[in-house]
Structure formats: C-alpha cells, structure tokens
Image (cartoon, rainbow, N blue to C red):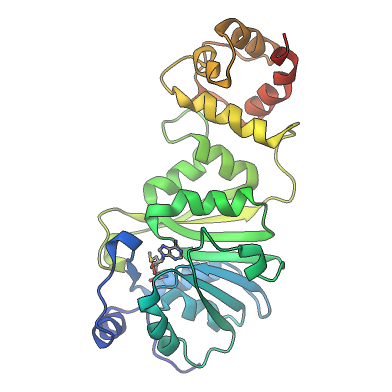
Length: 285
Ligand code: SAM
C-alpha cells in the first residue's frame, strides 16, 4: 500500500504533534523510528499471507504497518485508549489489521486469536516484559514463533547458558519452551523518546517437544525457583525452600547425582529435570 512509512523521525513526530500526544512513560511508550529495525523485526517473524500474528502494544502503528504489509492477519492489542483514534488513521486501509483495546495480561489471548496457531511480534512495554512472556509460555498457547524487542539485559538473561550471572529462572523457562536467539541490538536513538538502556530483539522458535523429560512441569519450575532463590548459597541450602530439611536436600541431590556444593546457576536444564524426577523418592521419607 502506498502509505508513508511511520518508522521515521519525521512521520512519527508529525503524528505525535497532529494528535497532541505525549508518550506515557508508565506504559513503556518508546516509539520506533528506524525503518531498518522495523523491517528486520517483521522479517524475523517469517510471516506469510494468511498467517495470524499477535502484536502487543502497537503504539501509533509503526511495527503494525510492517506486519500488515506482509499480508498476515494482524491482531494488535493496545492498552492506551488515547492511541485508538491514532491507529484508526495510521492503519486506515489495511483490512488485515484488527486492533483490540485491552490489557494483554487480562485478555483471553487464545480466544482473541480464534484458537488458531499464531506468531507474536512486538516491541514490548518493558515494565511488564517478564509477565507477558510467562503468560504466553505457561498458558501453552499455540504460539509458533515469537519475535520480541526487550531490554538488552533481559535478552541476555533469556538466552544465557548455565554458569554466568545472567542465567536464572527466566533463562530456564525460555529455553524449556523455546529456542531463543538474541538476533540484534537496538540502540536508544532508534526510539522517540529515547530509552535509557540498549534494547535487543530476541527470536524464539517455540518447541513442540520439551528439550528434557520431566514428570511434572509445575514441580520442575518450583525446583528451578527454589534453586535460584539463594543464588550465593550452595544448592543444599537453597533447596530447603522446597519445604524439606537440609539432610533431605543432601539425600535428594545425591540421588540426582548432583554435588550439593554446587550453586543453582551452574545447573543445566537436564540437571533440573533430574532433580525434579527424583523428588518423589525423598518427599515421603
Ligand atoms: N509498537 C510500537 C513501536 O514499536 O513503536 C510501540 C511500542 S511501546 C515500547 C509499548 C506499547 O505497549 C505502548 O503502545 C503501550 O501503550 C503498550 N502497552 C503497555 N502496557 C500494555 C498492556 N498491558 N497491554 C497492551 N499494551 C500495552
């Protein structure tokens, strides 16, 4: 369609002035002004005509426009009511875009997407990045692929390998449900207003089969949470947070073949799976 590209400083500033809009910091509003970044996000989503894509937080329609140009069916969920008349105007003529005014954390996403398999593409509001990601992953929605812009530091945590300080519960969850890759870094000058931190785009291919076998997923994530709850302490201490004694924790670790002096941040997904699968044996002792 022959519409001006929104992802430029000139067009974005024009839209903001024309609608007398000021970015709301509380809602994490930083609008993209780089055509290149927007195109790379849309490309990474690998959309084809007829695909369904969920965009969280369309803002003034910058990324939405690039997603719509692929021919995919775009569902854009925006919380800020002030942006609705703006989106009406900027996305005028794109019959494949639907805007829903809602808090994405409250919305029944599965219903909104008609129960179909979909992809996610978003420049996420940074104040709720983790809750949004967990909501999408834990509800086991039929998500095929997620391309999300997050703070660089969060992207590093999502993709971290065991052993470093970035590795934590978020890394384990992301890597259990998806194959996350940090695709590229986006500097602050690609946005209006400029955020104070670097951003990064993470591409996650959702797994159809988990990478490790666990007898109980809820228990798996409880173990992960406990292991990271006291990062500086040895595992035998941290695992007392599972409601067991130090002695039981020691026996449990021995059964799972894990040195009790290790710290949670050194455990691989397989180690966490082994711990989960042996928990039953000590629980009732
Ligand atoms: N997609 C636009 C872009 O790239 O320029 C805007 C991205 S901005 C970082 C995040 C957007 O998420 C804002 O438009 C904000 O109003 C919206 N938002 C914040 N909290 C939200 C929520 N709970 N549900 C849906 N949208 C939300």
